[in-house]
Amino acid sequence: MNAPAPYEPRVPSDSMPPGRAALSVTWAALPFLTLGYATPFTFAAAALWRRSAHLLVSSAVYIGVFALMLYLLPDIGKEDGTQQAVGVLLFVLAVVGCGHAFLIRRRVFDPHGLSGIDNEAVVERVRRQRLLREKARELAAADPGLAKELRIGRPDLPRQYKDGGLVDVNHAPAEALELLPGITPELAEKIERVRAETGGFMSAEEMSVVAGLPPQLTGDLADYAVFIR
Image (cartoon, rainbow, N blue to C red; front, side, top):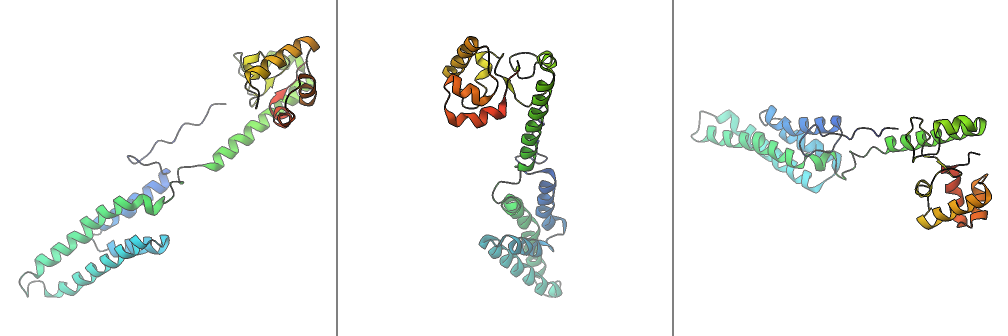
């Protein structure tokens, strides 16, 4: 089964999923897009969401700058320097606020660096592999000849049938046996030697006893081993 294509960032140096990355960029751009009028509300909303001291202080500062600008607006043209002061305050809200938002957007939208991790997809892949093993094992029990033709449990051979990672203990070489959980090269050689002497095994329990494998491996071996006669 082919592995899914890795996620390619939509934003440079961004590992967030596309939707969250786009939302974070939109949030960070609001101060500039609104000419600074949305800056205090942008940071206040983030502060309420994340309960961060940095965001609380930042929103308080931008609210203060915004309030001062509103206070000075009616006096534009009446007093010298008022227009320049309002321009500086707008620059702080729009440009400085936008740059500030872009610097911290990952801390706001992905504070723990976990949003790029899709655990559900991993769980689904494991479940699918398990189902493939069950189906392949059922087929091998019902029709061993077909199972051999499909090369179920033979990762050492080219094949098209997907068996979920099974290994045919009765036919696979030592290198393939090493793919089984807990099987070292020494144990793989031992299994191969005992197999030649006994003619093969019927189950993971029998293999563990006859080949003298560590008992704690039996459960995992039963999940990944198939015994085609």
